[in-house]
Length: 144
Image (cartoon, rainbow, N blue to C red):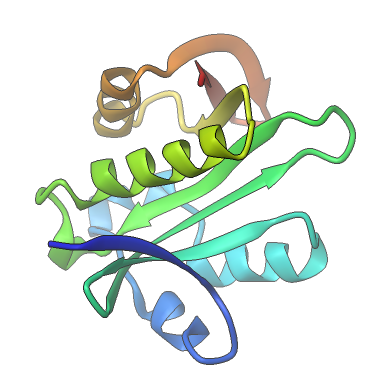
C-alpha cells in the first residue's frame, strides 16, 4: 500500500465527491462537496486526495489561517471501503511530515467532540485536546 497526497483539480474532483464514509460516521464529517466548495471560496485551503497507489481512497484538507498564521486540518475522511487498513494513519503521518519539513511548528485538527475513533487516532499520533471550540467542533493540537 503506497499512500500519497495529491492536489484536487479538474481531473480528480469527481473521484473526491464519490467517496463515502459509513452511514454511522456521516454526522462526524461534512460532505466532500462542501469541502471543495469551501476550498473554492477560501484560496488558503489546500484540498488533497488521499491515494492508495493510483486510486483515491480519502480526502484531507488543511490551511494556514490568514488571521493568526496557525495551520489546521478541517477535513479528513477515508472511504468506507478502505477504512481499518491503516490508510488514514499513514495519510495523516504523511501530511504532518510534509508540514514539519516546510517549517510548520504546530497544527490543529478540528473534529466532533464525540468522534471517539478519530480522537483515539489523533491522540496516538500526538495530538492533544485543547479547550478551544469552533462552533460544535473541538480542536486538538500537535506540536511538530
